[in-house]
Amino acid sequence: MSHQKIIQPLPQYAHAPILLLMIGLLMLQPFSTDLYLASLPSLATVFSVPASTVQLTLSLFVIGFGGAQLIVGPLSDRFGRRPVLLWGLALYVSASVLCAIAPSIELLIFARFLQSLGCCSATIIARAIVRDAYEPVDSMRVIARASTWLALAPLGGPILGSYLQVAFGWRAAFVALSFVSSSLLLLVILRMPETNAHKNPRATELAGLMANYRLVLGSREFWAYALPGAISYGSIFAFISGSSLVLIRVLHVPTEWFGYCFAFAVSGYLGGTIVCRRLLPRFGADGTLGIGSALSFASGAIFLAGALLGFAHWSLLLGAMFLTMGAHGINYPVSQSGSVTPFPQQAGTAAGLMGALYMLAALAVGTVVGATFNGTLLPLALTACALGASLFASVRLIHTRSRELAR
Image 1 (cartoon, one colour):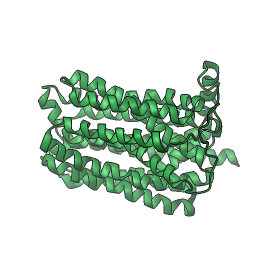
Image 2: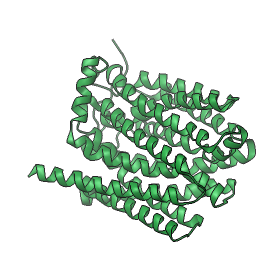
Image 3: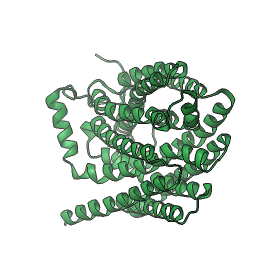
Image 4: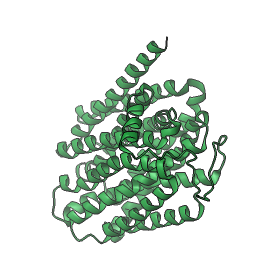
């Protein structure tokens, strides 16, 4: 019989150490992508490969991260959050070391895939902890509060990564990730209790797994929040995957400045999470998501209009990134909580399916951005505008239909 402490559902913002650890775990994903963004152009030169090959270090990470969520979630529903998290972080540490010493682009791509599997456990477990430890009424505010702190990772990551690239080369980013993940692993060993008070022994059985998948995927409540959230994530991933190539190669921004440019854009996400916390009490989840989707659409439209008018300047790209990430800061907490809250017994499975949907959107967007890059702003602007329009339409159609059915 396990002697691990179980956390019961708690009132708002109780167990601050758990909230802080959750923030650290969630930060691992943006650190994993943002810390080496400034190194992407250099990787193409060092390994003498095209930009599309270098993009695989992002695309394979996304594929691994997305696919693993379908497994990690149910595993944590059955065996608990703590053991799955420990094994995942151990894998992440090992993969980060392998990335740092990789002698070829092929091994780096493979190591990034392994890294994504470990990173997935941190993100999924952190999301499930919110459902385990907080009442549904509190969960959106908890996620919004965590997201505000989470913005520090994409704010500081590109700046640190730019200096690491200039001073030490691309391997330094993965050395830093090894250190960060080792620290998180130690904290989990010392401080992380088990939060899953409703372990499901059938969660990983094929019949039980399929039943949980059908329950979640068949729920209109799940899609009402998960689909807009996935499109919103795809909109920021367009900039994550394409901004370094456009800023450095097309707009000729110095590499050491890239981190500051990206940090400015990500400050929009930080502001968005703060705005979200103010909007939720006044407009509710649906109204807040509507505001965020409208802002994303406006951002993409402005970016495309500027590109079509021939305004090829770094300020246009940074403005579009700032507004799009601000919109995601509004959309993300609502989508995260709204997708998982209806499923107290399947929180890990719901979080995994939601995350897989996010990564599917990111994979599609990253592939499009890499394949359409032609040395101009236009392909990225077209992608951003299309995603903004899709997000706006999905929120309007799904939530209007839900209100009609509720009458």
